[in-house]
Amino acid sequence: MIRFNENNEILQEDEYRAILVGIALDEDISHSMDELEGLAEAAGVTVIGQMVQARQRPEKATCIGRGKLEELAELCGSMEADTVIFNDELSGVQMRNLEEALNVRVIDRTILILDIFAGRATSREGKLQVELAQLQYRMPRLTGFGRSLSRLGGGIGTRGPGEKKLETDRRHIAGRIDDIRAELKRLASTRALQREERIRSGIPVVALMGYTNAGKSALMNRILEETAGDEVTEMKTVASKDMLFATLDPQHRKISPAGGTDFILIDTVGFVSKLPHGLVEAFKSTLEEVRDADLLLHVVDTSYEQRDFQIEVAQRVMDEICGTRPEEIMVYNKMDLTEERPLDASGHDALFVSAKTGRNVDELLRRIDRVLTGGLVSAAFLVPYDKGAVTSALCAGGQVESMDYTETGTVLRGRFRREDLGRYRAYLTEETAGPGEGQETQTR
Ligand SMILES: Nc1nc2c(ncn2[C@@H]2O[C@H](COP(=O)(O)OP(=O)(O)OP(=O)(O)O)[C@@H](O)[C@H]2O)c(=O)[nH]1
Ligand SMILES: [Mg+2]
Image (cartoon, rainbow, N blue to C red):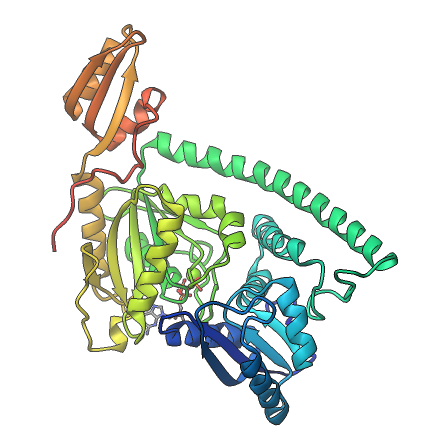
């Protein structure tokens, strides 16, 4: 497998020459195949060919059909490929069958993504999150795993030591999964505390979100620079690099725009299509930071031809992690690279900027400020009868839509000031939607 050293450089023990294989179930998968090529390259693999088969559904034993498999075996031979990368997740059995038939290393998109993540993770939490996703991927595939991931090769029907070894491995992995989960839980509770503190402080949170390499980190640095004057230090800036998944661990920075409301800006992991479910699961606490933000800046690489595909990918990941979506501004970044100003179909506020030149970043800050100060937030409070002052304060600052007198106190529903949500957090009820819900929408 592809391995990285401590500096995230790929260990070039072997040259990998790979053929990519995709299954098209009634759809055009060309974008997805291009993306797979990008992922392969990010992992240091040279892509020498591509093969797509249109099928109703993947073949159970080998993913692709028999004829296509023979064709692929021939192609591997004639092109001297040593690796085949499937665009979809393979089962352990499929992987083993394919390796037997093709006589090359067989991997899938998930392993590729997990490997890139493993090479990029630097914090303890990040490393544990990736390891958890890797183990969860490996667990159900222990039997019949191909040569890529284990040399067990025992498989179904093998008796004796092979099976015993498998059982020990399985138990070992299950134990490790439990340990990691426990530690992640501890780390997540620290994070939750910090988040609570931020909410209590009443400082709104703005999260950068979008496809990997769109320029989220670069934009964070530019915003820091524009708002901090001379104070911006090396310490404050975040790493921004021309590579997939440069950022894994969330970074928080306080932004104090001149004449505007202070806010916390969060930079976090970028998205890619078919982000492995285990990875989304493992990165849950990281992604929750995006979900719970007051405002999302959806950063798009305007210069990239397939930006619509990338926007859709990001929206899909957000749908997976969010019940109620925070308000969003579409930030079309890298405007310095293209004359094109594509029409935005998302229905959100949209703006063209360049993190590189700083163009329109001042306008972006103004829009952020408008959203953060302008809107009231939908919420519901249950205030005990002996806290009349709280009820009065909520009524004074917000727009109360209904008041119900229950056994335990007054239930107030309506739209309230953000500061009041922080200040009277103890009285918020569960029916309160995400912090972004109900804000006034901005028009272009
Ligand atoms: N020309 C140009 N390049 C940009 C701009 N913004 C970012 N870049 C470049 O795009 C690349 C990716 O930028 P990052 O800030 O690392 O992107 P990201 O969205 O944080 O990426 P991940 O953390 O990998 O998800 C870097 O090489 C940046 O220098 C821009 O406005 N114009
Ligand atoms: Mg980044």
